[in-house]
Image (cartoon, rainbow, N blue to C red; front, side, top):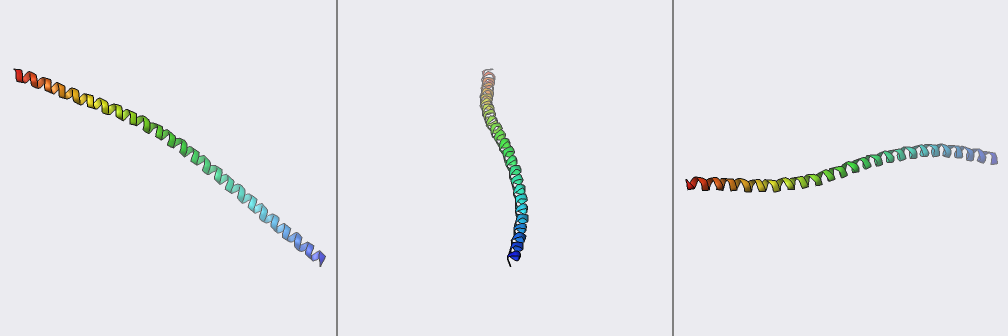
Length: 90
């Protein structure tokens, strides 16, 4: 009976070692997958930060262009008024 229990225990231990090896391999696969996902997230974060920076720069550029546009509109009206005054004085 003792010999049979020892064989059963040895068989169970061997089975558990096999399961443990499978689980360790699966753990490595999951860890590798997580590392790849982290690398992708970091790359996306870098791109997002670059885009935010470009957006901020474009916002400043658009503001500058809009200010110049207002100046040009004012100058165009001034020139039109100037010509209107010249025409009316003839």
